[in-house]
Amino acid sequence: MAPQIAPSILSADFARLAEDVALISGTADWVHVDVMDNHFVPNLTLGLPVVEALLKHSALPLDCHLMIEDPDRWAPQYAEAGAGSVTIHAEAAKAPIRTLRAIRSAGARAGLGVNPATPVEGFEDLLGEIDMLLLMTVEPGFGGQRFLDVVLPKVRRAREMIKGRDLPVWVQVDGGVSAETIERCADAGADVFVAGSAVYGADDPSEAVRRLKAQAEKATAAAAW
Picture 1 (tube, rainbow, N blue to C red):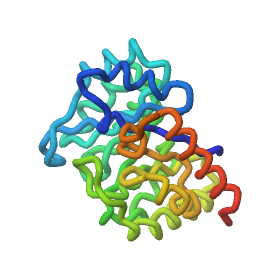
Picture 2 (picture 1 turned 180 degrees about the horizontal axis):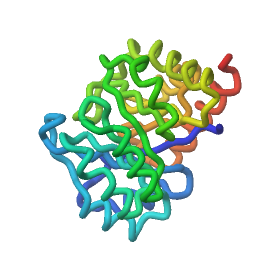
Picture 3 (picture 1 turned 90 degrees about the vertical axis):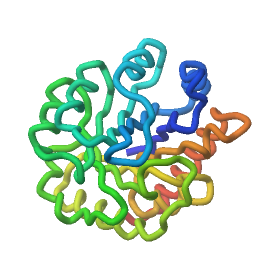
């Protein structure tokens, strides 16, 4: 699959989200929405009402990343609202298979997220239930953090697991993705890249997306996987 860029509006201006989403509508593939509840992670961002409002103004599909304490309860509602993709965290879900199936049944792609210290091997049997595996490359909760290179071997293992199952599962990396790190992520096996500060901290967010995608495409073309 060609690399995809999902700018995170966690780094956008919350007072003008619709305008900031429009800035990247010509180059980005997704709008990444970080939903945090100040319980699963130590930060409070936005929730379902804001997602419902953004859906009316975004030309891009929304990639909702739920960093919340009770994803089994809330995740299906994001899919029913019209999100294109909904990711729950393995560390938070109590009934992951049921919830992942509910997300798919509501018409969205189902994602499973894992924190930096969480091994991916324990979720190999769930690969058939998901459309995307999200690997956090920072500790979840705040934007602008430094990329954790220690996660790159896990990205490689995830890609090998998926290849071994011959499944069309995307590998997403989230946290510290920038011009300095995106090629390493692509080389390791990632094909969906969440970038916040690297996009919305640039003078021209759309051009920043274009450059990141070009870097990812170059690295993917040269990758062994």
